[in-house]
Image (cartoon, rainbow, N blue to C red; front, side):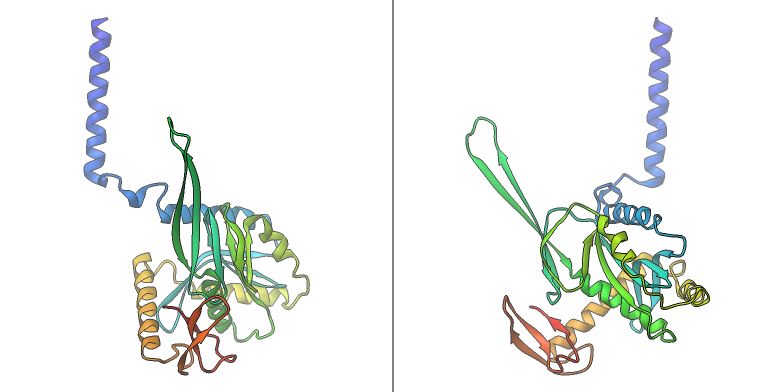
Length: 276
């Protein structure tokens, strides 16, 4: 019996030493490596979307995590689906709660409402958590624009921006004319495009162009984030100076149905807007 105890203690010491060495090499796990971190949550959502896209017919070609160079740096696209019926540019969001937003607002809102009843108390308390996310419709339209610029040789093929929520978010308060849907609606939405615009050879050519222009292996995430932040800051400074960052027009203060905002004086030719 004493020998068994000694063996157990020895194994425990060895395990402790191995864990300590692992911590010294890799560092103590942080919030960045947590399964609940924003990055990990986003990656899980993208993985679920990829799994659904794999059910498309073999005529559809999917590229994931595409990074294209632009005039201001880079743009990162979660998924691009190429087919003879169109090109689908997908922005994935993995969110829960209730989402509020429209085509014009710079940021959308995510609300969690939880009713909690404490023990030894008859009272129920309601807690509201509010988070903000950059307008995903603007993101998806921007991505579609850059893909279309890359494929100027195919002016008639539809390039369709899509926002797909992989989580259980409530989208009933989203007001948009764009495609903002749940993951379960994604494949039926893509399959509704039945008019062929491209031949098999043209589809292959577009796939080749996108693969050659994809610089994912060359650009680190930190570099892409830096480009995005610099772009946002340039836009902010331009708006503060009263100049539309998209077309160079004059930014004017407008009153909408639900809120006030800065809009380009060249509307409707330019629909750029900014909010305080």
